[in-house]
Image 1 (tube, rainbow, N blue to C red):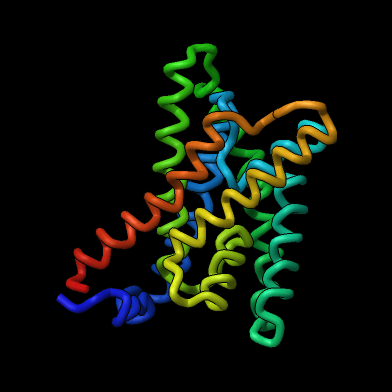
Image 2: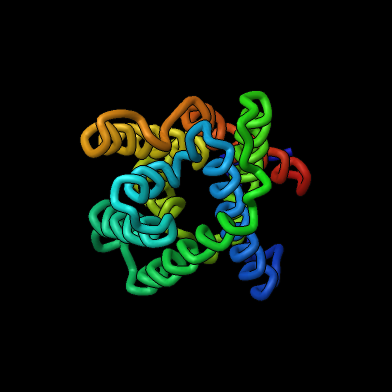
Length: 223
């Protein structure tokens, strides 16, 4: 078996174009679904939604709106990181940011069954949503056709630091987002809102599970 780091995966040779687009949209929906579960679980949301959730709580805006705005800033971050390597077609991420925001609000409505006052059950939902989100991220990134902004900025940083695995860079970005969310929460609301022990768990393990999904996939295709 060859080393996956020396022989990078090329999904274009393994999936048809319609399949790749289907995987991308399925991945976005899974991520939004996982975000909604963590919001209802009440132990702090996932890392990618930490800033939007805090901003929504502080401003009264919907999670979908704040998600779109934060994703817009992440796209601007990609422009700064990639500079001339940022191509015009990558601006389509603004469309995906809008879609992702809409899906977040929709999924909040269809996952009210995840609301609970039971601490142990809340932890079950957090762990479940973390694993589910990592799978959604992997499915979305695997086709290598486009990204939503949260993964787009990770991919941009991997281009700048090519020795870093996607999942490892994801962990760094996640911790940065959580730190910013905590700071915003303290400044605007005088305490931690939307950032709790579940958020810390997600920051540790989403990137970890993304790496695991990737390694399992590479092994399954003989890489």
